[in-house]
Amino acid sequence: MKRILTALATAGLGLTGLLVAGPATASAQHAPDYTPPAPQWSQCEGLPAGIECAMVEVPLDYGNPRGQKIKIAVSRKKATDTANYQGAVLFNPGGPGGSGLAYPAVMTTRLGAALAAKYDLIGFDPRGVGSSEPALRCDVHFFDPVRPDYVPSNLAEELAWVKRSKGYAEACGKTYGSLLDHMTTVDAATDMDQIRKALGQSQISYVGYSYGTYLGATYATLFPTKVRRLVLDSIVNPERVWYDANIDQNHAFEARATDFFAWIAKYDATYHLGTTGADVEKAYYAARAKLKAAPAEGRVGPDEFDDTYLAGGYLKSRWPLLADALSKYVTASETAPLLAAYATYGDSSGDDNSFAVYSAVECSDAKWPRNWATWHRDWWQSYRTAPFLTWGNAWFNAQCAYWPVRAAREQRIDGRQVKNALFFQDTKDAATPYQGGVEMHKRFPNSRLVVMDGGGNHGLTGRGNACIDDIWKAYLSDGTLPASMPGPDVHCAPFADPVPPASATTLMKSSAAQDDDWVPGER
Image 1 (cartoon, rainbow, N blue to C red):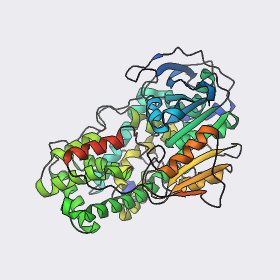
Image 2: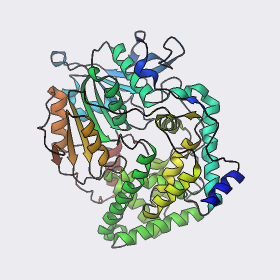
Image 3: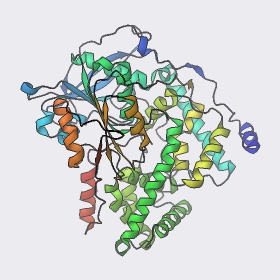
Image 4: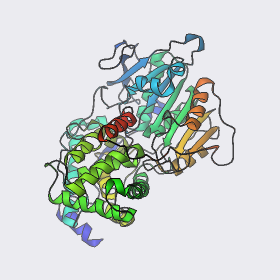
């Protein structure tokens, strides 16, 4: 430990990050009342006919509602079954940093036309995201390939990444200054209540995925009487926000990687990578080492490879495409399938908006260690048993050690005043591990928890599992909830594991069908 402290000081990186501005405040809970101007609706550019867009003007700082304003981009598809009107339902796909503007179209498919017609379907880009103004971008080249290997071979390589992460934090602070004081989940949840007002609704319903579950739970904590129906799918653990949650992810993704390797081994006649999961794992890390020595087409090195295969931990429907790319690279040195998989799942170069918002929210929502020696200890310890994700995840979050504003006081999630809620969680979810659903269920005593046993998917509703979808749609139709039981209230069988398709054309079509409405959650 003394060695890392000395090296940090010598490198000029400090022990506790940048000099910081005043604390980011969660002032929304006690803010004076504010009502946004009436939004002006028009057809959304690039979205199907019948989906309208508008800007909702909100205070940057809810502690000073008459001060500077920002704009939240909102989309809607109005209800057509007015005889059975159910009000407005807001959607958030996760992140933080995911755009929700397309979700009225996405959710029409997931809900089915008949149920969707009963609601005003509302999408939105949270503050800082996408079409909202301003949209955060700190360093648009941060993810350009080929980046230094995530896994440090020595202390010098580790400190080079520390310096890179600190540089990103400095760039964000230099570009946005005091704006970063007002990027918490509490701020975004309070924006949601301004959307409610702009829509003229006394209450709203909400469906959130991944980070969107934490956003929805925060809204329900702050504005419990404004919640009509609440659906949380693939749930963030409110006890582990955010440093500990990321370490939890390392181990959950390791388990999914093990399952992926075992699945490939089961189909060795197709992929020729070995008959055991251990054989396939060895082939995977050999491919990674080869890419470090000679990146594929000068574009896919070890980090880009890691980012591509991380996608398989979210949805196992992606396994055939990823396995095919790995097989062709290992057995025949073909790079085209690997480049195509990277373009589909791993390429974040050219626009860091989602990462900038992810950073601004997570780094200011709750306290992070400001001493790199703590990170060094914790992440090497994690790496010993969870090498698949650990160091990639560390560098996805290391800017928080140097973030230019202090974290807000963490919002305690409390759902005791919410009259009903419906939660979904997979026991093998890697991005939001199972315990998150259990903990959130405890905090919302009037909720029901529906568990998929061993599916390993991140995002369960609207994907064709009858057990899940029947419960989800019944609740959104008329508020019906399953009977309350000790522990999880309902157990559902998992989605079936995929089977390798017979042709490359089928492979691409199958993958596209699974992914056309999916937005990744937080790292």
